[in-house]
Image 1 (tube, rainbow, N blue to C red):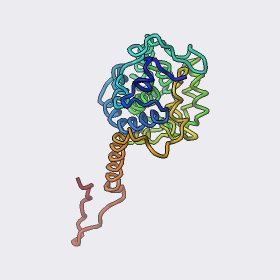
Image 2 (spheres, rainbow, N blue to C red):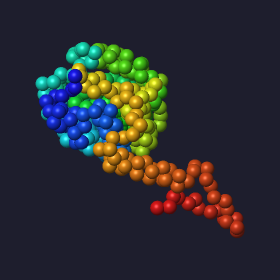
Image 3 (cartoon, rainbow, N blue to C red):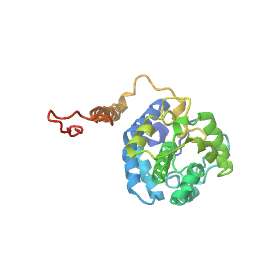
Length: 290
């Protein structure tokens, strides 16, 4: 059964996506291509906002998925106010649409105190997951927001070291009893100093659990699906050939990645100290050419 809260899947595709796609594999690739292209801009915008508020979470979703969904940036109260979301047949783990904002704002209020953010990053992540504010794209949006909350508090979570089964088990326990599972799970994976915005964006873009490419670890984007929702992206293999309708977006992503690769190659290495001039005076280090 297809997740169809708008009742127009046949005429407008899955969740009214801008390409009218109905194939789950194509939708997953479309979503993740948009995420990879836009995550750096989303993190930069979050860095400029202090303190983070609910509006910033909505704006992050719009930045990440505005290419994919015309309703991006609107929460479940606006898009499906009577639709409850559940996991494994349980509908008591996630906030009602009218309560999603309250749960997310509670998490942001806690995170506004850097000391508390450093002490309770898992509990704060659990509250964000409990809010589950969007019809689609919750995992990647909330992971992006959480990454900035961590960065501003001076550390990062090395999600790449968190095993998928451990994450999913801890997610259920955390939703049942807030503050009882995620902090224990994350404790061995907290790193200082924090990564830069550019570094964190690249790590999120490549994190297996946030995209179509299945992997044995790092499932932070594993959103709890509502009944009938398309399975999470991390469970699907990468298609050999991208659907033609996504050529433009994928082309933009490839151009972005080519530019980033070129900049990395031009950047001087940390130990790349030029030799002295013939008269013995040191040569100035040369930065990358514009």
